[in-house]
Length: 636
Image (cartoon, rainbow, N blue to C red; front, side):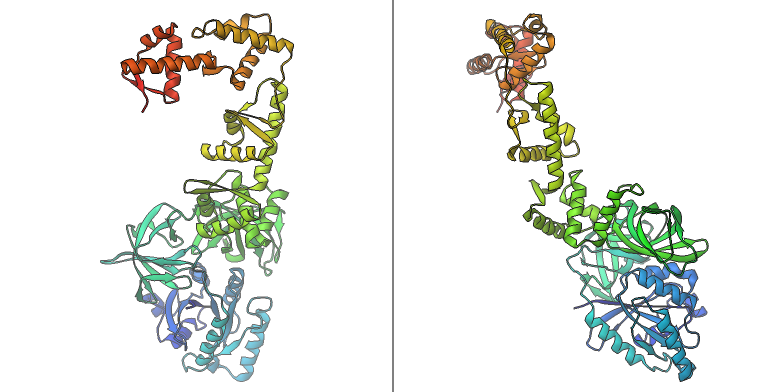
């Protein structure tokens, strides 16, 4: 069933609350002060049943300019708005401001109700209708129905209900597959029940027993019970007015402006990338870094508007900007907001969130402006592709990306798999985590590694390659080690680079030794052959006339890379044949005695203590042996 929220808007004392009472039989002014003064101060909530049995929520917003914050908190999630204009007064300042706000926050459906029509004659009523038509030109209400009523006499009320029913049939259903979010507009306690929050559930669903998080912040709570339209429910759906009774959280831990959403589904931010539009009615433009009040969801935050492509935004114009906030908030791409001056208080414009967790943008940066244009104008697939590309540079997991973008993980995964099928994204799967990396980022990484290897081969022409770990730390430091290994393996399978043991080289590279280097190689290997378990030290190998110290060091690196020497530690190398003999002797001694000491192993090999320790530590490392007190036993 489609779930509807109907809202009122308009100037103070134009009959919004009386109209709702005529529709529902209930008074939404619940405060004593409201009833005594005859004006709405807080948001009022009720419901009524359409002729087909569909129950719609109704939000009554205050009309006085002093309570504009409450009005702004109420328009979030409205599907159909009733702009109320009193016949005896016509369009008034708050009528115009409310209409501008509704247009800026993206309300798409509604009509105009002329109240108190029994107080004026037909000629006057016609003049008011013409005034309304002029006022709504260029807004979502242009061409909408204008219905005269008398709420006290119940004249025209049936026409209002019919128009609501007609408009409701053309509305799209709220997405139940999207991430549930409830911007809190009221929080209170009930004796015996605890903390209760109310709001309009924007999408998705919440059910009794769900764990939720209160954003911004890390407070976790559980939904103890749910009410929808004053009736108990096990599940609440997007498009419904909802009251949640929360367990595990105090009233002091939640404020109007908080967001209730699934645990770890959103990320707090101090900046927002946005597209903003100024009202045409302003007398002057908006200068860069102007301090304003931001109304986002039910939240109210001071911010500075950083214009990214100009110094002044003129009335009626729109542009990309970054809002630098003075308090943390959470948002989702596509959220609408309002901007107001705070002294004096009046609305200047509003817009749409393009990136809820941006980096700090430089002004007049073409790349930043292009990125924002994609998020503003692109289709969903293009937007997701761009989000993946942005996050690929830091090698974020799908879970991290969904949190940053405030999207359901399963929805994002489905779209990313389509991008994988189109060859635009490579997905790396590690245990339960998925890491999507854009092809552009991998291509750039491969080019950078190839450039690095070309320089390396020129500088060290006889080394078999560069250490894989060094490449990882230089180019993939932001990736988790296992993911970095997977990415390098992926690039190696591409064929432009190759791996030899723990070294990486260009595919076509083979070290070639000249006669002098061949002689140096033979001399070094002969030095190791003379005494298999008393190998020469590094400094011993530097005393040859066959090469300089640097050339000798390069030859040692070459021999390690080619596997003709095995490096046990920084100053201990053995021939592979010697290492195999040492291993065989180890197994023989273990079979005879069950364990081995450093001294016993030293004597068997006829070597010194340093070499014996080096060998045993090497065998510990590759899990042939393990320490047991002062002895070594076989690793099991």
